[in-house]
Length: 382
Image (cartoon, rainbow, N blue to C red; front, side):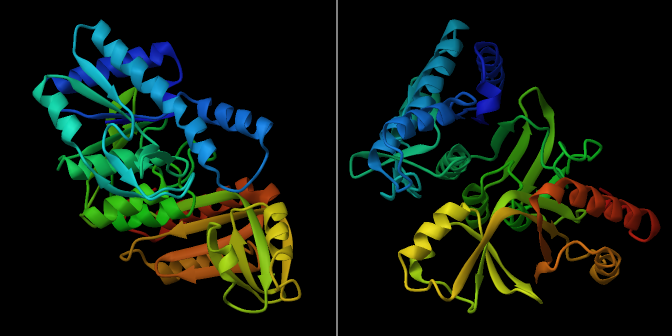
C-alpha cells in the first residue's frame, strides 16, 4: 500500500490512512510505503536552494530532502499504534532499498526485505519511507515521485499479489480530469500502455515506476484514498481503451541540424524528437531554456543548435491497436494544432504553445468524443 503526499497532507488524513491500513491488515500481510506530506519536499528543496543555489546534483540534497518521508513514516506508525496495533517505521536503508549512487536520481537495484519479514514475524505492520535508499552507506533519493517506484519494487521483491497506489484522483483517466471533469476513470490498463502514458505526462504513476512494473509484471491498482472501491487495475491483460491524452505543460525546444546531440545532454530528460517543415529537427526537453543555454555554452555545438523559448507544451495521444487509427487521425488532422508533430507506434504527439494547451486538449477530447458517437464501437468509449 503506497500513499502519496496528498493522502498524507494533514494529521486528519494520516489518521484516515492508519484506519485503511488496519482494515487491510485484518486479512492480509501489508507493507505501507509513504511519501512526504504534501508540499514538504518542495519546502526542503527551497531551504537547500536558499543556502546553496546550484542545479548540479549534490549528495547533501539527498541528506536534506529525504527527511520528509522519515517524518511521515513515523507519524503513520504512531497513528496505527494509537489504535492498538503494532507498527514499525523503516527508512529506505533500514528497509534494504539498495540503489545506484547518483544524487537525486538513484535507481533501485535490489531490495533486501529481511527486516520487513522480521516485522511480519513479530506481528508488526512495516511502514517504509518511499523515495529513498542507500548506496555504499550513503543515503540516496530517487527522482521525484519515487515513492511509487519504492512501492512497486518492494511488492515485486515480496511477491505481492497487488501493489495498491493511493492518490488524490480516483484512478487513471483518458485525459487530465482537472481539464475535462466529465472524463471517466479507466477500469483497466496493460503495463505497456501505462509505461507509454507515464513517460508522456500522465502523472498518476511515476514513469520509472511504470517501467519497473512492466519489466517485472507487478500488478498495480491505482485508486483514491477516500474511494478505494474505485480505481484502475494495471496488469498483463491487453484491454481495449479509448485514446489517452497526456501532456507536459513546460517544454523547451532545441533546434538542431542533426538527429543526435552530444553526451553532455544525456542526463536531461528528453520527451521526443520532432520534425517541423519550416524549423527542421527539434529536440524537446523538460529542462528550462536557461539550463539548456548554459549547457550549450559549455559545448562546441553553439553554431549547430538554437534554443527556442520554453513557452511550449507537449500533448500526446496514445491509442489501442484495435482502435481504427486512420479514420481517427484523418478527423484529428483536419484540425490544425501545430506544425511540430511526431508519430510513433500507437502514439501521436504535438508541440503547442503553452498558453493554448488547455484549449487544444479540450478540442482533441471533443474530437475523440464525437468520433466515438459516429464511428467507434462502444467497447472503449471515453
